[in-house]
Image (cartoon, rainbow, N blue to C red; front, side, top):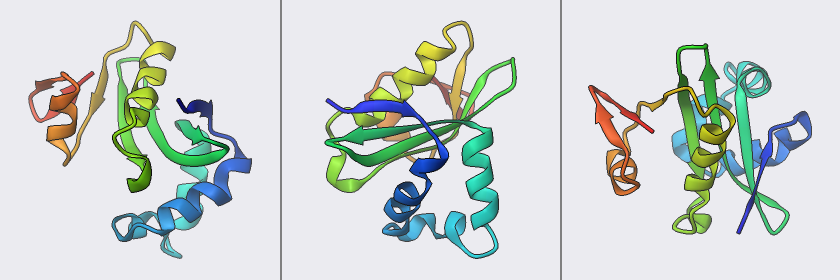
Length: 125
């Protein structure tokens, strides 16, 4: 089982290195976006998932008092199918038990498999 931790500045290098291995995340890591991405990681509700001392995933959410909006959920390919994404989602739900949690995703099958229900064009957790 992995540990889910509150994101801190000291996680930055390892997380960015992890995402740098994924071509789909290049828009977050380009020279134009990097400083903004680093800042929003700190300003948003962000958690990292750590397995055997290594960051293997993260979740970043926006919180506004009306709901929790998952902006990014990522688990490295080697660590998938171990429940780490579910652990990250459970952490945000536990922290804000009275708030609805929403995610707009292109991975619909993942959220359907977890039993989350579709609400319009987003999934509510």
